[in-house]
Image (cartoon, rainbow, N blue to C red):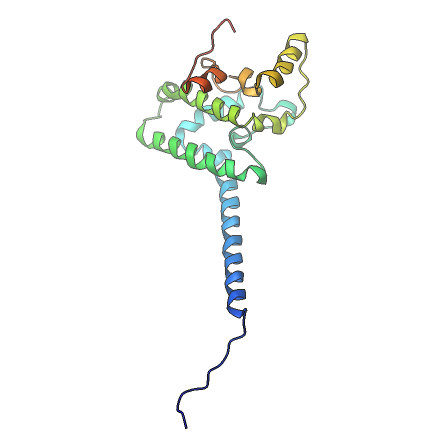
Amino acid sequence: MSNEPPVTQSRPGKGRFGAALAGALVMLLLVVAVVGGEAALSTTGFCTSCHSMSYPAEELRESSHYGALGADPGCKDCHIPQGMENLHRAVWAHLADGSRDLLAELTRDYAGIEAFDERRLEMAHRVRMQMKAQDSLTCRRCHSNPRPPGRSAKAAHARMQSEGLTCIDCHQNLVHDEVEETDLTASLARGSMVIRDSED
């Protein structure tokens, strides 16, 4: 008589079901963490917790965009693509832009606006190029059906389709303190910033 314990057979698929359930729970927790984290990092309160961002936030509150039609936009409305379909863009914006701005915050003294102004044109151009690459989707979220007044504005909007332009190509310096306008198409072709000709 053998002293070996009897072999018990496990039901096929039981282990796989447990692994699949565990995987699904991990994925669900990951999605909740990413979506919840993105929402928390997109608040104006979080953005302006860095002193340097208090300057553009104040400029926003003083701009014609703030309070227009009863809307008080925050940082995310222009700088972070919204909606689940753009979640990957929002996460990338936080990783790339947030890391860059945090490093600048830690290595520069922003007690006065002068240090911010030294970077203003560079930052404005970077944001403009991002908006162009995304076909100004943050602009279009609020301005989904623009009806420009006047013949020249209508002609300019008609040119958008034929010349591959987007909102930000023409509408620069709307909210924050003015810096030189940049030619985004030429900048894209050259791979570096091109200041727009003042005669354009």
